[in-house]
Image 1 (cartoon, helix red, strand yellow):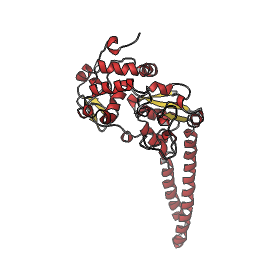
Image 2: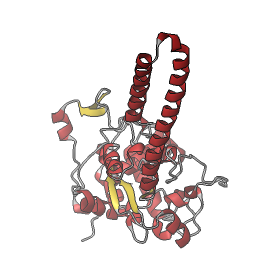
Image 3: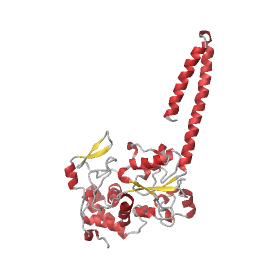
Length: 336
């Protein structure tokens, strides 16, 4: 029920009681009380039904206009949870499952894709069976959350590296950990690990590719602004509702040397091009962290402001000194 409807209901009940008290004599108090209760209850039900109908229509209209491409490790689970609470099934439908085990639920995102062997949610739309793609994407506006390639692979190592690289992860050696991870990605099958290491650009390819990119640097604000603009205000993400990884919290992109950055750049070159094209982020030397999400910036350089719910530099001069890592084209192995 909306705040406006709640206010109106309270005001209406107060008005009814006041009006009845004035129109009924003291001798008829019992009768008036019964009338008050019946009228107020009937009015309240009508108001509730009207409010529910209005909001139901709004959500019904909104829910058919958008579809989310579920890019791995880009906070899609957070969005899916809010969507499911409002009757919309996007991505993983707010379910965490083991992809190695048969899925017995009904969420389309967890179904296996024959072309890639991955779950559908982690499979770019161009690989989906036509009928399922039409069902999920159709002619809707397809949005996807796009993440800085360096920051994303750092988070993937922080979040999942313990299983494959236990010693490096235990030591929070993110520089050598990312190198090991990238070498395995480059040498392996492109659809390995449930398609979690595909370039994000793959999800932008037609058919059924992303048409609206959401800037992950400013999540959840960027996501909320887009959802609000499309009539999906009910899916508003509160700061504390953002799901994120934790571990090696004081490590960040600035810990990657030019060798590590070169491996990332070579494999995810299309993502760097896309970042430049979509958002104007064309500086591959830049070191970033997600200042609006807790545990996503090193507290050796930033302080968490609980009231503002964001990271702020401890020392701007110190931060400026490490805000970029300059690497030559040769070190990045950039192909002319």
